[in-house]
Image (tube, rainbow, N blue to C red; front, side):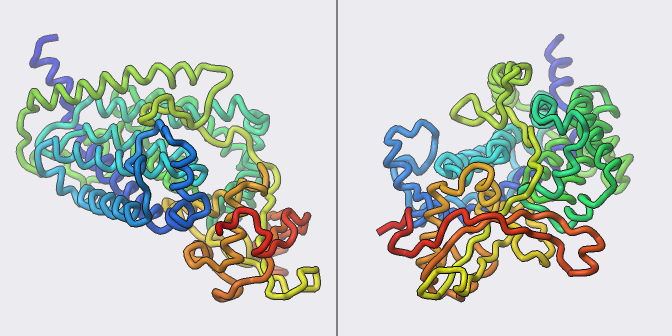
Length: 492
């Protein structure tokens, strides 16, 4: 292949719409991620948080993961990092860096990647979710998509499609190798009801007929185990495959709250959508973006070299996730390098059959017996009030609420949870702001305790009779009454 023919293949002028969606969409999700951290990180992990970062850094004096906080952490510095990330994300969403030479959006996205990696790498259990590393990998990859002055590089578009493939196919393989409910098509009998954070339509989805749920599982297997291979097919097949993935992800958006996991999958799937297909579906979009936006300069040699170097790096790092996909001991949401690039993904290898919720209660009474006036704290996303309609928060991530879902699956005796109870006893304002309702209006309770309940969605008849969206049954007292004096995890 001669130089001209190679350059013609490398440039992908028919994917300008895909580049616009990828760059602006990923930047928008970085904005959400930084906003989530700005609002929640100090209370959860700050200097006086539940799991303070200074203590974490002191315990790991040789922290191998890259972070700006390696030498010093302060809440003020954290807010500066989040503020910088928000500003860079906003200008990328507006498309301003993309108007300049390709190195401008490159630096902007790499800055987002490094800034957010600094947060994730000290975020401990509150940042231990697959969509954190997914956002990091997406930010690094789309950094090399260039600017409006050059055509989109085809190798980077293929690597974004490869990221979508690992995300979808990896999740599909985790399910097939996981619980029997995915193989006998009964997983969706339970999932809408027991997922970590239901949304406003989750109950309606759960109440659909069981044959429909079996079709849902079949559709999921088709979308995750078959469709991803066609992302690399010629057009318009690749665009159709992307459309199927987008449709299934939109159903997940409508039926639950999974932070930005579904939204980033939707954004990244556009890497396989060509301009002619996009124009055919939405005629308002230009067919020829060059004619609409002005002339594109010839791809500079230096940019070609940088892009091919990034391509070679990501291809080389793909060895480990490929091996993992074919392993009988497949890892889920794992990174094979300290920079969290070319990771392996997957979720819900098994489906929880029952929903057990941990309710946190407090009382002002001197004697913490059952006759005391126990009042329940309200969480923003976690089910509590049986009459309350679940809210839609995604792509925003409620980190405290998500970890509350994991408590009964592991142990309620996690260090962070005892620290949380101690903060409630102190009526800590930062922690109380993470909640929907403080039943004591800022006053310190004398005692707090944790009780567990079995939750299930009410039937349509039960809802008409009681007005309750949830039916809950008391189970057991997970943590007996604690006072401030005896609360584990309290910081003097």
